[in-house]
Image 1: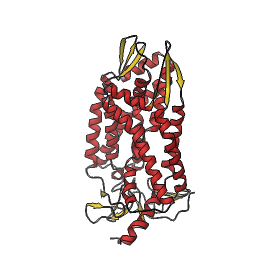
Image 2: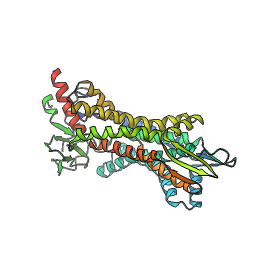
Image 3: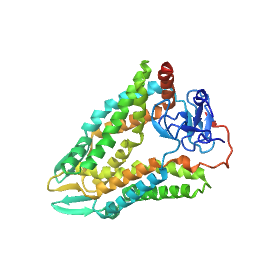
Image 4: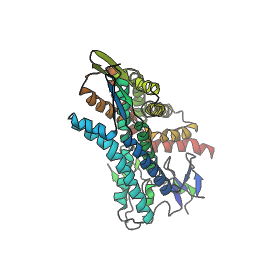
Length: 211
Length: 211
């Protein structure tokens, strides 16, 4: 099994053309984008965005995300207390969906990316296949944590009943959005090919064809 | 080292950088990487025709999905409904500029630009108007891939409906139907558009003339 890197070739990340690498940075001969053989400083960038996401996640959970005014009385709720309220109202499916999207998914993304960065940094390539699956899952999960932000945005617009009931967004929504965006950028900064480099244990030469 | 003529017959896996000779595939077949299992190369059925019709359909649903009210609530005799556009104007009115911009980007701007882009590309291919400009255009089109969040927004609509059902009377409007159809079209467009085919044709048509 040869990789493009070993042959002095590089894959253009934009149009997937294999280019001959004449220097470290190069323009793709097909689409003209500048690229490197591997994303430069991929681990550092991923780590930095990840830490930023983790920091933004703290105020996102401490400040209220939504303030409900019913008959003029404000009632603020954070992400967690909002989930508590849903459980009190016996809305279990929604509580589970919101808990997954706003607490579990961001945490899994942050922890998972830390784990992958650590694995590449230590040079342990025991199960690259499993790890790149994990990376795929993390990449897929990214946008779904925006769920809570969209819910609040919708409720703010829909529940506008004057004195009877209005909904306003709280400051946490800004921090939470930042968390989501930072984790998405962190995931795109990571180069999954680093998980496979210097791994010569598996020898398969032909691609499988599916019909 | 491999010379330039050979690199066009090679493909590398995006996930693990394994190098393969480009397989010859018929329409509807795809090749998978033997090392990590990622899709290497795909030939999609009737790609251009399908993309062309689906993007036109998507653009037709776009305006009703944005302007028509999605859901409405009735509480203590008062009624209020909101469209996607109302969400954004309300958020701006209440001073949440960042969230307003992001909702606009992820739920309106990115999907719209992607549909228009797909329409333009499939139009040029269908009527044989391929020009070098498309190389840059298609590259830019790809940057938007992971930032379209219509599907997350639909889940947010469902979650808010559940939340509102608890203590208000809920009504559903035509905006929701248009939104679901828009989501369907925009998802199908990204499934039917054959990237490899587009890139290879562009390369053949645009770059060979120059050299």
